Image (cartoon, rainbow, N blue to C red):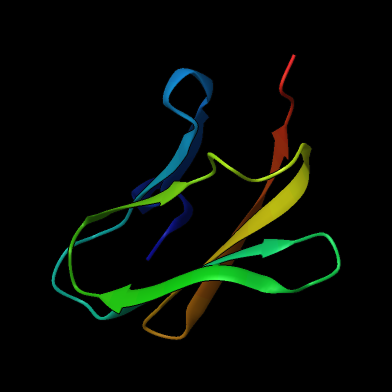
Length: 81
């Protein structure tokens, strides 16, 4: 998985973080808070995964994606203005 093959973006209107990766490889997805506590996690081979942030407080979260021993992460800032 190269940098260009991974897309992580936060869609504020629907309060979801979307993760797009190459399909067909087992991928481990995690959402954690700033202190490192894992809030959501999933493992599957689909190319698209989403994390629902509704119900979570404002703050900083991290999305961690592990595919084929390549680990990428992205910081997500959630503001409820």
